[in-house]
Amino acid sequence: MRIDVVSREYPPEVYGGAGVHVAELVRALRSVDGIDARVHAFGADRPEAGTTGYADPPGLVEANAAIRTLGVDLEMVEGIFGSDVVHSHTWYANMAGHLAKLLHGVPHVVTAHSLEPMRPWKAEQLGGGYAVSSWAERTAYESADAVIGVSAAMRDDILRSYPEIDPARTHVVHNGIDTEDWSPVHDPRRVQELGVDPNRPSVIFVGRITRQKGLPLFLRAAAQLPPEVQLVLCAGAPDTKEIEAEVQALVDGLAKDREGVVWIREMLPRPDVVTLLTAATVFACPSIYEPLGIVNLEAMACETAVVATATGGIPEVVVDGETGWLVPIEQATDGTGTPLDPDRYVADFAAALNEAVDDSEVARERGLAGRARAQQSFSWPAIAEQTLEVYRSLL
Image (cartoon, rainbow, N blue to C red):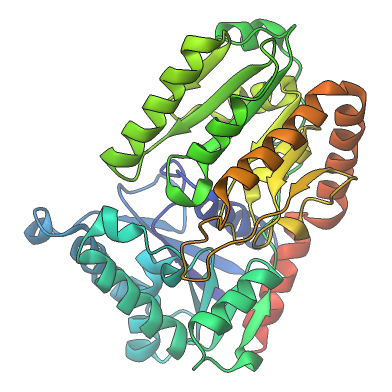
């Protein structure tokens, strides 16, 4: 069976959870006898067999980002000829899959890592391009032969956002984690080189600076941590100048009142992220929108307890009282996910963080339980087989 996977992100150009998912899924698919998994990704060509990169079309280099994206999708379509199934990831690549379905008569599978209707703040980033991205996603989803949600909560969001989709065509296949690549690494010297004191407790955040990740809310909660607790922010790629300025002001305010505020803006290589996660007392995931939250799996695999918002697919990963702490949230239903009572949410998140750092032994126990759960329930070979079952159902 030949599978053509289309994605904006693919190594080495990966900046989010969808890119990690695609890379790991493809690796697992290629390990299965009889499967020819090919990749079509945005950007430079990759020196990897079966993988093709596609640059922005020269005539669109000055166009709106959404239009450039559709231009790349058009470039991909011809390369998909001969496929048995095309599988697209995120709106950036959905139209390539949709057009390949129409042109080549090939079944199209979509995996939903997020949904445009659930991210209305992207209008700040894309302007009129948000209307284009929303159209592309809706068109592809409603015409797809199968739609996969990375969590049961994601599947519910799909059907709520796009009620024209037949529920029988929707499936749940969770994100996964490679627990060999993501495993504890105790390296105090490297931790210190990265600006963190390995002998002090720390709370770490890893993620992009975007509304859905809830970073400003987390920074407000972090102000309530004991002064000896370090705050480690692996945070970059801001969506807009406005949210970058908001985060900068909050970080500056924290740094005036406490030591140990470490902000790493560049994207660290995986070994450094693993080392920082391993050294942390607790990992913070203050997302207000998260279909699953692969970052939580990464932290759990490094034996780090998690404090996370009880929203989206997160409760399908983080078990409250066993692998971490889930913070309740009441949210607006307008698609923004905004807390109805931000002050209460911030206070509850701060309380959970303080409980974690106050009892390092409990945090340690929950970290160990988290790795066990990651190993047992979220392995990539199992997820690849579930995905293959979806493909086979269409042939």
